[in-house]
Length: 334
Image 1 (spheres, helix red, strand yellow):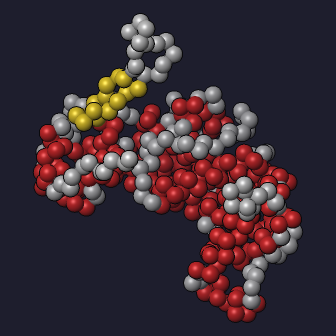
Image 2: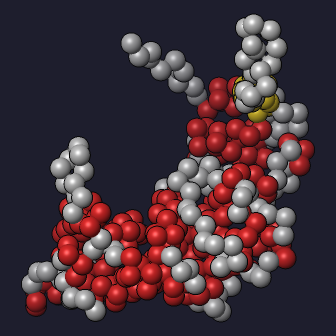
């Protein structure tokens, strides 16, 4: 039997009183209340979560009453905050994260547009309605049935594509429908595909077509590049939905190309902890940006943001290492 949600509704003042009671310093109550009203306790709690005290939790061996050798020690968060924690620390971290998300979205927009061209141009040379030709895709995408739904991944993609076309209010879509009817040529239809639609379609392309696109980005293996696009789509969704990014745990991690193929990723090989943090995805983004627009200042802007806007949280034992930065990130060619 599921238990009911135990936490009661609290007024903004009660929320602030609770934070103060748990050890959070507040120098301007009115300003703190304003932030709680405009941003919300729950959203801000993701930023002060690392400020909470921790206690090591390790089950003892019932036979010896001692710590087992191969058991991982868990750090259980307590309600109380570390000494020196302030409400402003959480706000500053929130503002930094917001700036980071906006900067990342700027790059992902450019990458998404470039991919529309790459994919539509590559498929278009096979057929102007290539996306309606299952024989042009890998059999795992176009023929393999899902055991639960009885459908292929291609069926699911077509449904998403049709929804995007039908929902679109763009003048060029209406013009093409009125003048030429359906279906739309791939180089027209692609303009309404979002990052996820592009990523899924690329994942279903033949290996030869994948390799032809990935090689343009100095990645020889198209399957590796497919994993990049899945992860960058995840990154885009995090940013687009205003979710916390700076220290997020990346569950679906991209594959890395062979050592040396992408020098900026050298530090992440054989380092599972850094692979699970967002900085690796930012380095991948910068790699693609340098190819799409070599004169772009995006990398320099990212470096400046990390150097100048990340708040000083050394008193809470927090730094950019929680993002997964490597030791040489400042000296990299941005």
